[in-house]
Length: 261
Image 1: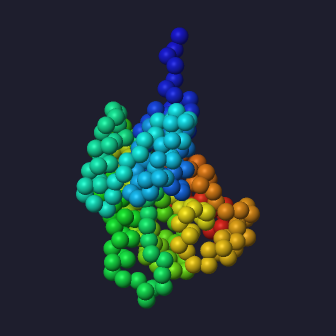
Image 2: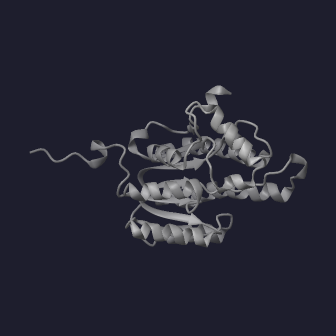
Image 3: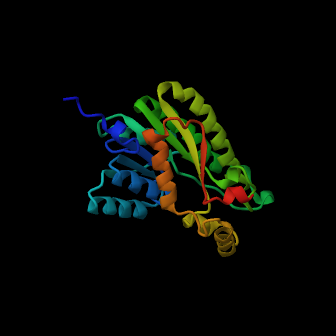
């Protein structure tokens, strides 16, 4: 009798038994990804910085569903916060398989109201912390693995009062391409994921919120906004062995809106 085939060969979409770090992982898209991965059998460390209540709610949900998910409070823009993520990850055994960088911040103002402080804060979390986290966590990866950075439409298109966030996401996508080339020989794939219009708390800070959301849904070929589950499913795919040939790519998940530009 032949030995059974490895699980990953029987189901290349499986991520069960692997370990993931999800930044920005207690709210919005990051929360959806953390829950999705845990429900798919991955052991998840969900990193957050401010909203302790959201983290407690997520932990309670994970406990009620018996999910392998725990949280870590850490400021990714500081060396101490970065070290705390590494320390928290090391508390349980096994190599790292996935890093999903969903943490993001930004200032939504006209260009002439932006300051150097706004620039530094936005790029510090959205870009610099990603690079530093990759540097710290790369040695923790086992054989193979996947890194996914969350981008946005503002990386390639102009969005009202989105100058700094859009520019930081453009820089993030460029960094993904360069890291992809350097890490591919180690068996670590790096890609970015650019959601369309997703209704999260982040929209509360954007001008003309209701009209822009309605226009986005109207323009969508599928007749609706992108959901957090749409994005979580795409992140799962990019991290699975089924996407083993996808390297240095930006996957757009927007219901087809980009083809109408």
